[in-house]
Image (cartoon, rainbow, N blue to C red; front, side, top):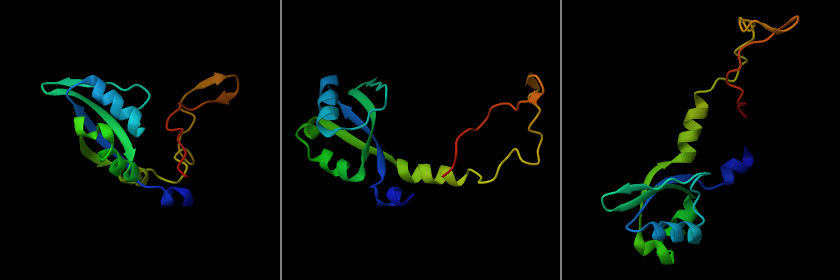
Amino acid sequence: MSNEAELPPLIHVEARAAELEDLRVFARETGADLGCRATPRREAEGWVVDAYLSADRLEAARSSRSAGRVQLEVRENATAVGRQRQAEVGLGNRFSGGDATRGGETVRGTPLAPVRGLGEKR
């Protein structure tokens, strides 16, 4: 976690532009993370796409060459939201002391529990 504390926060923004090509140029120029499958949405004034930029890259993106054709609206600090959600996750083993065998036997002689919540909190 020591590296996490040193990284700038990740900011979720909506990038808006009149032309789809303006969003493409902006994403290439700034290195904005559009996710594995960017899906621009058509609106009355043009196109909108969700993007993620670190706080320091956000400031650089606002002064990029393509920034004049793209409007950025900050939606949330994704790092802070992620930390809040992590606080909701317990640290203990939810299956210890409980009925972890309610999934039935699928391998002879071995009770298997239903698979839920395999994520590991660090």
